[in-house]
Length: 418
Ligand SMILES: Cc1ncc(COP(=O)(O)O)c(C=O)c1O
Image (cartoon, protein in one colour):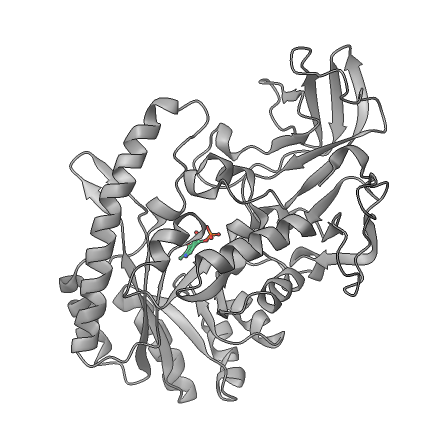
């Protein structure tokens, strides 16, 4: 997007670069064509965007949701084939999905412990429904002094699975229909964390060792389930950072992708994401100038989830010669920024009150928790049948804001899922 020439219709606001989104959609489709594609809703958090990606992804199979009430909301809004990726205790929402599953919709719930199964079995029993479940296989690599992966699932070996299956066999309202092995330490861990350059070779080495273990473990557990007579509708794996690896794994029938579409700042630090383009962010107005060399924008915060660190702060996307102040970071309701003389090139615009600063969130879906809508911009001169305004040829864009062309976020619909 040509940030130098775009006029944001309002600030603060969130932006969605439709050209970059299209580029990312095409790249995901190309990289994952060997398997089916499931969209990670937590990394999109907008029904409009989910529909847009779905409509442009030929091997789209369904959604990976993050909460039971969100799964219900997706069914209510016409989506089908939903895999809720994290175990739930929300009995009411599970029960409410039966209105849709009885009409033929597919809804699968994640488990890795008997307690998860019991909750679902209890709800199934009350409503006389058999519930489809997915076994979450832990793909982490525990080493003597380092746990390389995430601490979520209690199922790491065939022995663990066998034990859980023994419990499941006693549950008449449960059907094992899927398995998931999400290799988070490969798909979601950047090699180049800010200020941690020395760790890069070690992370690369660990990732490559871990790939071998992931292949072996996921495959052997799927084979075991097949041998035991379970007919798996799907074997899910991967995430944005592991598209090449996961799509090449024979036991995997589908991959989940979310963050790659917006390509937030955290993914800039990942080797496998270099071809993707930043497609979403937010724009803040400059409202103050406390001293020479410092401007202050209205709004701030927007720190991403996870272990706290510099990699969780938003990044300034344009103009590039700005930097954050250590004392205030990304602010609260105001964010001061230093104008770096060294970086400022001769042609870069001089910022004054009323100008804007374009930024990107570190994580994908979390951006949408702060804005009711993503304002769509498009620059390329293609067909205009979709109603997006475009510039003609190579003329600079004056205002690429598209009338009525916004993508409403979950938040904009008054929804907040946890
Ligand atoms: C279970 C699971 N699958 C897949 C993903 C990948 O999502 P993304 O592509 O947004 O990184 C995640 C992200 O945390 C996840 O928790």
